[in-house]
Amino acid sequence: MERIKIQSDSFPDHFHLRELEVFNYKNQDFSDFISDRINLKDYNFDNYPDLSIYCRGNSGSGGEIYFTWIYDSKKEYYRFNTLLSSANIGSIDSENKTITMWWKSGWCDQDVWLYKVQKDNFKLIKKTSSHSVTDSTGNVDCVEEIKSY
Image (cartoon, rainbow, N blue to C red; front, top):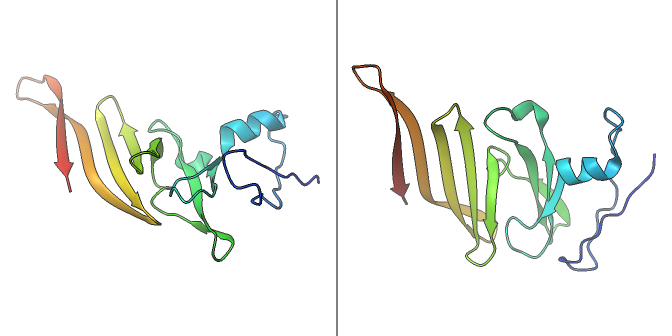
């Protein structure tokens, strides 16, 4: 088994992933596997890469779920983050330090959450929910509800 070192120019040069074991799945090229299934992104804006790995079992028509670990630089280890591992991570806004997450089911049912990130705390600041409603004549409409916190 080969060991690989992953580096990124956008993070401190002293940081690297020490060891990663990957098993060849359906003869997939390793670079395709990494780009599609393993992400190193800074989700909590501390200038250290956090690790997310695609979870096929939790993904589906609602989107792709990645198990996500936040790097703790003081303890020098990755800590599993339940919130970031529970839905799709849509967008990361480093200027405003917010993360948008979402989950979809069917043609209309969808939840979108906007979190403000402060250190390792993710505070919900806005939730948008859409769901289908059928009236007495059988017409189906999509209704949206927005809630700010």
